Length: 110
Image (cartoon, rainbow, N blue to C red):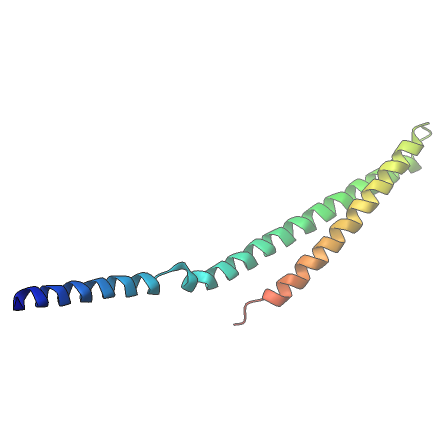
């Protein structure tokens, strides 16, 4: 009888330790690396948006040069393409500003 009580106490102790370790190693405590991961992803996204914006500005310059050097009847189409590129650039700038604002809020403190 006495040995069975000791065995039950040992089993309960081991079970409590396993459950405690399970709670201590849960993903809730790993949330901080996720924030830095989000920061890194936003930084990469910001850099990609900047590249896209530069490419769109280059396309815009090329289209404007085509108009200057063209006697073509398709100038209306080129003007439409320029308007579309202008709109895309403005949308990218707005999104880039939002990403930069979010990054500045999330910026890791040294």
